[in-house]
Image (cartoon, rainbow, N blue to C red; front, side):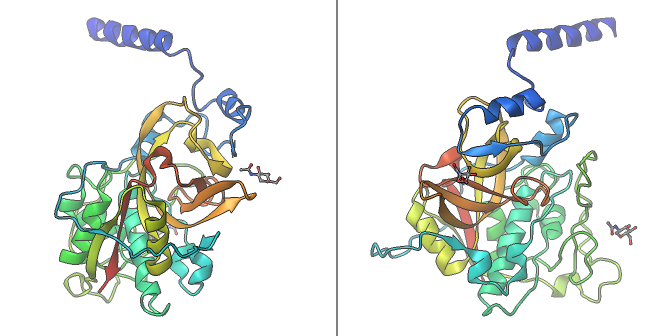
Length: 331
Ligand SMILES: *[C@@H]1O[C@H](CO)[C@@H](O)[C@H](O)[C@H]1NC(C)=O
Ligand SMILES: *[C@@H]1O[C@H](CO)[C@@H](O)[C@H](O)[C@H]1NC(C)=O
């Protein structure tokens, strides 16, 4: 016992000496970011006493290479001029899901929440903006074994596999926490004001929520195609979004990112690496005629960042954002 305590203490001390940098949740750290002349502003999104573990838990996306049989699509590109700005919320304004900002709660389910959002967006877009069905992120974190990195969907997953599974086995419908118009609603509450509870994914029961008139086995919705978009080719990503709707992207999160408030995010070049994250790209633009960006919706509640959204530098594969783009088409 004594021995253990001694070792733990020694480890903490050596850490402190090895890392003279500012604690990344301190006010000083945020002030320092704002003094760096970055094209974005930092502010407090997470409470001062949030633990590194809590934050890393939100960043649980697999970055393994997709299997070779995973299709990569290529859009014919005759070099036509693309719009300078594009926002899927305006392009398909009747599709409610595109406007939604989700909250993954204290669960490493970014991979499922972003995938379910993109699938829901595309079901609406490809039904002439009529079908408002939401695909259930709960079905992914609870029941999709092939999607997850470990057995537990709150400990990470891989967007490629959610789309493959959508095609092969389908997902049931289901909206946000406590919503009643689907089979499996999201099982975990929105963070209010922040997430102090970390959850494991509930056990898969292959049943719809109590009170739902739907039957799990009969409520599966499928894709006709699952694919990735050619890596690091900005125009291919744009053509895919214009033609088919929002896409899932994965990228590397550094400690500066969690403080994003507005502007065009660009890595400060020195903050600590925290993990991988999956998000939904819904458009692009050029801020003040100078800073090209992707418009991205995050899943950390609308209180985070710019009303739940952020902009990130476009065309330079910033933090790997243009590397792992995945999507599919509803059947
Ligand atoms: C664009 O201009 C606005 C208004 O001057 C400013 O607040 C914002 O920081 C600028 N954006 C960037 C990326 O510099
Ligand atoms: C969600 O539903 C449960 C059970 O009906 C209820 O106890 C809880 O208060 C609801 N939560 C919210 C945030 O509406």
